[in-house]
Length: 137
Image (cartoon, helix red, strand yellow):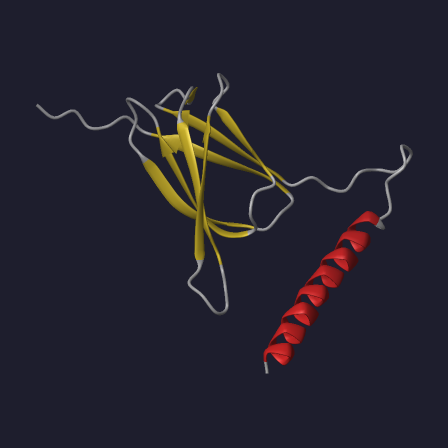
């Protein structure tokens, strides 16, 4: 009985090792692009944040991009990305997730913004306008 269990464990271990080696070989066998060919389309999301009546660029605003990765057997895994806007009021997110995402913008002296967007294009620009908060005494 002990030999059967030991043999099954060794066979399982060898099977995993062979599978790993085959996957590694497939990755290594992928063709390398030459200098003359055009690179694949790079997905990039640009978020432009402006505010006020004069549409001034909002500098150093925190931009949160939240999305969920759907799974079939377990709960959906949730992710969040955080970037800051530059002096021009733009934030760049390389390789954004496709599908439904929540974009939230938080900046000092401005109302917080949050809205769901459906991302589907390889390159897209989202323009967000912030307002000043109400004055209360």
